[in-house]
Image (cartoon, rainbow, N blue to C red; front, top):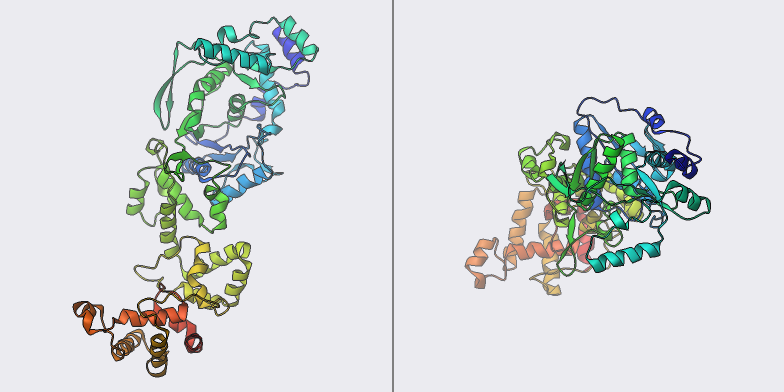
Length: 547
């Protein structure tokens, strides 16, 4: 039996050829140097920020060259696939504010001329390429059982030899086609293996955009290309998809680096142009015992993209932070270009670090800086949109008091050094809740140095009856606060108190703290004068009388 006859027996329903698919998916009509990259996740767990680092780079780089970024779903590991896995991926990309030219839009929708963009819908294409390999003696059916493979591995371990299916251990490699056909016809289960032409004692050289020049032994393993259920493994699907979709740059985790010799071999067998590879260091986190490890897409929920969406982390700070991880020179560029759009940054693969540590506090600081520069109206609009989804009661409240809320958010905002109290929208309510009478109930007062309730009431009553006037400007208001302090035996400034602590009961800081805590319950708040102006005299009196 000839190889072609065997191929027809194995793939009786395959009618197209590789040339047919070359015509269906022609080379893209793009300018020279335009980059085509893809984010190609598997829907087998939640999407975390480590995943998003590669997605972010894959989106950013083509934009610089007027290229193409597309989303492909690699769902060949269907045993581990989770419910709504594709929608979770699409949602994560949207959460980060990224967009793509082609690919999967939802569980049921795709756009673009190089699809299907879901691997499970491309089986016919993979089988066409596999049939070609059988016809040209580049692959063969393997009938080895799981038990036989286990026995082979044990022998290799005992002999201290390399583990794998190669050389004398490749039992099915030299079966004749008649024997293969006989076993196929009687229903024996088989996989399709690569018929490797590599020599382990020879070297393969290639240039990685991140790692630089890399040398590996050639691949001599007859790896599995197609499983017994007809589904391709990653190596084979990568060849077919990235060639037909005309991918120029493949970005992936450095754990795939040892697979490059296999991929070079496969591309060379078909005479296809090899894409550029960039193997990224895996983002690490510090676990509870202080050791570093990579993020788990099934365990580390606090690093899931949806977690950052749920807490209201804005998109741009997340992008900014990912760029600080992606390129070591970004932060110095940002310092020199504080207002420049991110797309102006000259990204370089050579500046990508190795195994960066994900620092949530740094992300939060970036976000605090970002939010501090927004107008109060912008913060309100974003806060309201977030609250509609995650805190509907608060959304109703701030909608009822829209202008009032905007004024609250504007306290110490439009100035040279604006406050940086919150880094995400879920932080805002804990900072401003006391400004709403509906929330100011059953409060826990954070009294400080002055904590005797009788003295507190005496100070407050004197202040309201004789000193406070809502029409006072800030200087007048503060001067009256000094008079109040002096009347109760407290220094009118901190310096006097420090120079003569025995001469005073405390300082004006203690007096203002009493008023601050009485009106807000908190010992740390934004500017007290502005808070009092917004609360108004009736609310101020009501809260003081409540004590």
